[in-house]
Length: 202
Image (cartoon, rainbow, N blue to C red; front, side, top):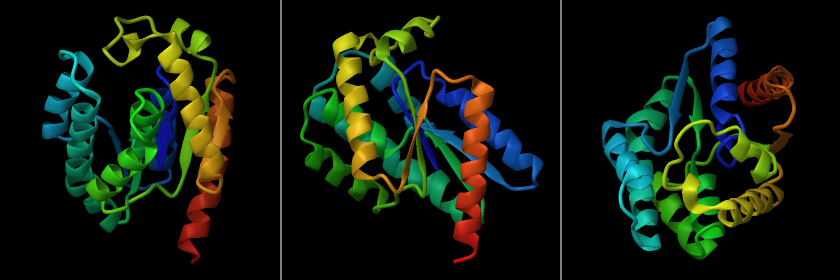
C-alpha cells in the first residue's frame, strides 16, 4: 500500500502508526519510501531533492531509475515473503508532481513508471489531502527543492492527486488530513484490516 499527498500532510506519521499496529499483530512489515528506498535511491534522492535544477525529462528518468531499483530490491522480495509493504510515495507521486505539477504529459510519466515497475501497482493508496496553505504551515524545516517550488505548484499537484483518486476510485481512499492523527490512524487501520481479509480470502 502507498501513502500519497503534498508535503506537510502527515504521511510519515500515518505510515509509522500503521507499521506499529501491524507489527503488534505479528505481521512482517516493510516500510520504505520514494525517492530513497535503496542505496542507489539515496544518491538519487540527494540529487532530486537537494541538488541543482534538472530538466523535467531528466527528473522523470531519475525518479523512474529509483523506482525500478526500489521495486526489484525491496518491494518484490518483500511481497514474495508475504510481508506487508508500506511505501511513503510511489507511482502516483510521479504522476502528480511530474505530470500534474511540472507539465509533462500524464501518459509519458505513466508509461515510464509502469515500465520501471513492470506494472506493479499498490492494492491500496491513501491520499492525505489538505489545502496547500495549511500543509505548508506544518513544514517547520528547511524546504527541499520540490517543496520550494511554490504555492501554485503545490495547488496543481494537489489537484492532480485528486484527479488520480477519482480515476482510480477502487484503489484510492481520500482522507481529510486536517483530522487528528489518531482519528486518521483509526480509519486507515480499519480499512487495512478489510483489505487484508479481502486479499487473503481470494
